[in-house]
Image 1 (cartoon, rainbow, N blue to C red):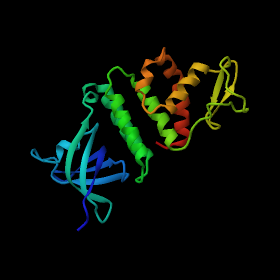
Image 2: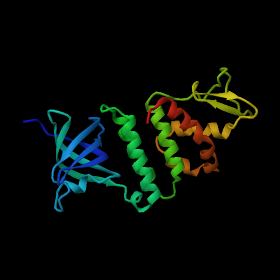
Image 3: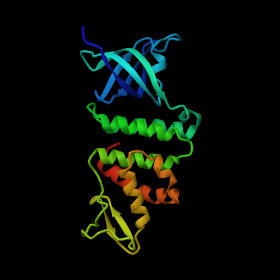
Image 4: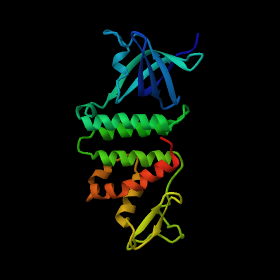
Length: 231
């Protein structure tokens, strides 16, 4: 008999199977992504149901399967981010970011992706935090984990980025190009540096005029994401 595996997990997707079962895709810190069969979980008194809610971190135990699907045998809720489901916009963004991370990661995704997702859920759970900021930070972190960091020190001509200059962003070169009519100045570059350098978006909410900088910097991250990560 296969040995039971005990770990933490965050549900990325759920698919109903048969009359009462459900197939889950979960992200773990130490076993990557796993697909689990949760037998009877849709029954009213299922003991598994409470630990596999979306927008939660749970302790799970499963028996590895011989093929692609393991068997879930127990769950216990660790942390539920309940504020997310109280707001329709936060819920919809939460669904989208779970799907985005699922599409962007291989089955062997390492612990850094689990950490990214826990920080993202905590940020979505914070009512005072802008959803635009959360999504922008999440996208920047996806790029970072995939090894696609922009050059935030020098421009395409290898000149140090200057506080009194304006720039365009070259997505292919992943660097700024000096241009007096450029859309980006020192404030935008500062925010992009913070987006890639911060372990969580929560500290960024205290920046002055944050929403204006977020809206202006969004295209930089979006273009890079579309170029290097197929979503």
